[in-house]
Picture 1 (cartoon, rainbow, N blue to C red):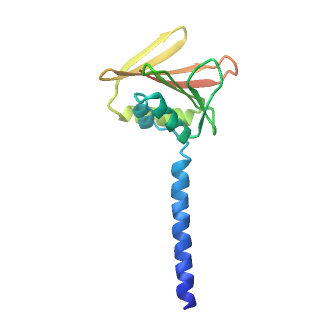
Picture 2: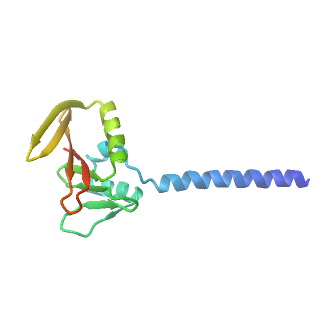
Picture 3: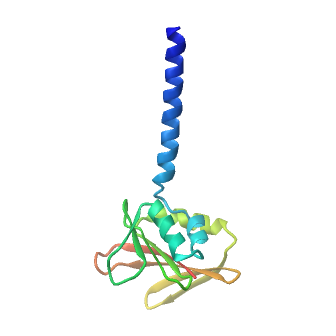
Length: 150
């Protein structure tokens, strides 16, 4: 009888731990993926805000409206009500992951242009455009990678 009770308790604890891990991992989503950015770019301001809160982003209190910063890293998302969404990151690995997913998507590469020492790559699908750029932050000298969805 003790073995049965012990087995039932272990089973209940195992199920509870798995459920807790599943719930906490879905609630603490922190990494934004390309498909998520591509999906939310055309959503309402409220839907974008809900998504960013779910991904542990905070609204910044500065002169730029709708600018959100990740609690875990320096990633920033900014958007307006005209369908423009910008994702900025200092993290080269994050940028590489986004670029891999972009290149796997149905967006077509339309080349690279340089103006005022800023190199911009363009990807287009239907009437949607993504501009990719890398620039140096004048404040700290670090590279900033950006994806601009229009």
